[in-house]
Length: 229
Image (cartoon, rainbow, N blue to C red; front, side, top):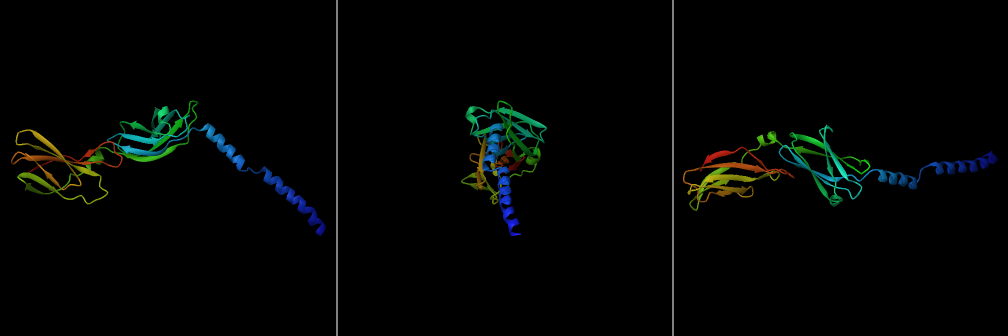
């Protein structure tokens, strides 16, 4: 029995060495990765969807790979797409792709780069929203708290904007001057008072509140309201 064990031990050790030699080592995996990098151009990164009114800008950081000469943008489940050239100056820099005439909604944008031979990169995805009439319909004007007189001029006191997440930018007010001309003034949401300097007596003003969502390329306005001052 002992003799049999002594004979089996060298054979077992030999089989272990053979199996280990057949398994891929780190060098083999590196070879596969090197081959992949040689085929696929670098993909875009750090994508930002910049919403507008029925349009959008897609802002993406281009790869440092100089082989990428073209980028393709897909949306609407790849039913829509557009191509753009990647210039030498845009390598390793940000590139903006403009998407015009796109209906309001939430989209998943897919970006793929190509080299001169048509090899394409791994897909980069980014989900974002395009705004439009439905969004605008839900916007409300800033609420007037009171109408007063300050140093002889009519003034509007607004309720303070306490919602720190609000994308309200401020309120635009248009009114008639005592000279007969028109004036327009914009009051930031951080200010609670609008003074109508040189306003015509007993007149009316037209107001509309502006909203600027994060990364938006357009300013959105609530429907105009007219009030007496």
